[in-house]
Image 1 (spheres, helix red, strand yellow):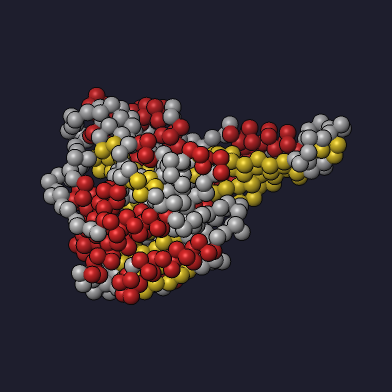
Image 2 (spheres, rainbow, N blue to C red):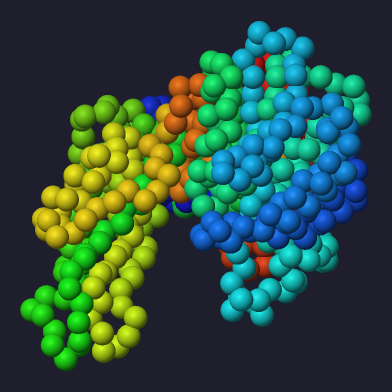
Length: 495
């Protein structure tokens, strides 16, 4: 899942210093698909509870095995024509498909999606209009956990490939499909392992990589009510640290001057007060080159200052921009490495002093804030040698920035407009959440990774289905998802 940033009120006017970069004149097309059959296959896919739990020992191997068998049955041409491998460590449940291109000398392209879904809390079941793993088709929607995040992408890709194979089509460049098993818990077993394998096989560079991110949604960008397609061009990194205080426990009737819980709580308070400094990421500058012209005309000078600012310098207009962004927790997160205390554990009984207390703090790093830099920042902030600090995550650095002016971005924007028309805004943006493609984009062989979920939602209310209740997509819009993947496979031939 991802979050976004924006400022200002909508406007049509353009500024000479900030000209519109929206692609114009793309002819919309219609791709005929077997929608009834495709909907039935996606409905059945949702019925496999391929859940990623935080406890990795709680892994339903049968759900994944049965889902893999279903995919082989549902897409016979794909499984007869493409090479399929089942990879992952220590559990091999990620899928890698290889579709050999006509020209092996061309750099390949990769489409990514993930099989796993988040759990459905028991106390939320009564809030669902349809059973979350029923795959019900009702009221013009396909319902169920994973239908939006992210099985519609898996099946959109496979439906398009099956159609292409039926027509006897073969791509010019080799295409890879990667369907991970554990994206919802960071991807250490699946996507990271597959990226290792592809790197070891000698791929020097991917021409294009696409993964999930924000769907097309009206009003998704603050200040712009229009339909908007945001293409992620960079992701922040990921690291979780465990802070632990180990001391002497005892009876609560004889408390020490400082308890283990109190010592750790003070450390957390000091850490939260020591926030990382703000700075403007390169991806945010690209974002405002595209979005700035669509925002309030009176504020064009500020947007231009951000769009064309220089690293290491800070103008008064950029400081004004940062001050406004910092007032909102969503936009503030795009300006610095964030600190989030997510877990705190201590004690087993109300009259027992626990011998240990632990907390987990999650950081989403900006470029340059490596694990070593973050650990040192924490150490200085808490200034207490009694607290141990341990990296407990499958840490990943902030990614490279994909080229928003390059052929891959242009092919993606062209395809978006071919399927959904020209009456929408397309722009790059900086992803502060993250997805499994970070395991590719953080490496030299995949600098140009673009993230977008290729489906149209009606409103931000539907977007709440990501990890929430009543996850659903419109039947008719799913047909366009398939058409989108069908068309972009052809458009990649022209890179």
